[in-house]
Image (cartoon, rainbow, N blue to C red):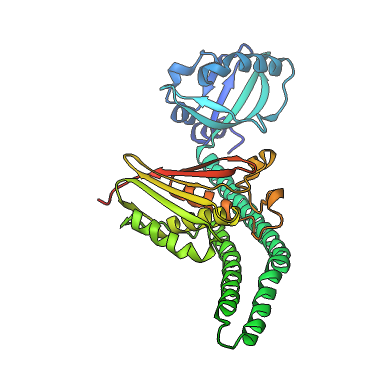
Length: 377
């Protein structure tokens, strides 16, 4: 019967939790076989030893203080609720435990009984669950932030579209109606003037849409780096030619190239960098001004500079230059989304590069992009 001494002995011997009986001075009086399994000591090595032998050294002094307090005022209770309790094996390794305490008197001596459970697996499962919860929480937070950003983008887009789209669309409609009136010989220059205005307006609309498409792809991490070998000097010259139609009267772009010509890089990203920086230089510079595009290819980097003599950036606003939707106060009357340089900075990051600038209001701005120069293997 369980009530018999033999029954209690069987419970003590075959229990699947560690059971310790500890004297009022902290010495181990009894230890069941499961304690030996948990801690790696034999029963002979444990009996009459201080219970602190089973506790990490850094916690022994504090534990002795708690043990003495328990002896003075014993009660049945779980120990260390909300705490990370650790046991120490004979080999010095530590493991998480859960402990419940009880007490009784034998021959006028107050004895404490500790029930010790190894919770390594439980803690591992709990940690894994907490990690999954954190991961899911992060995903939900990022999703909410993404949704918030999209709503902000939509709001910004509506605001910009109502302002930025109105002017080029009005220009297109006006020029189309005027072209119809200039249908006689000798009026080719007037027709060409309005065709150029239409072309410029369409380019403005295209740039606005491209900015938002690029921003969306960057935000979703959908921009893939595809590197190939190509002649960077020829590539830059083609882009300069492509921008010829945007130049104001008397403006011209000077292209300088030093070092190797062939690079191994993503052409689409570089084209975006060139187009953004050069179109900005054109936009913010006046007529009859020179724009300098210089390229230096060496070991270990490629350095690209775009220098203009335009309106420059107010000093107090320069810290915000690469922020999303930023427009300097001296550029408020010039078309733009405030996204171009933000997008450029993100593309430069994808190239493992850096971008910097120097600017003096009224004298111009120089942008410098540097990224590693690698050869195809």
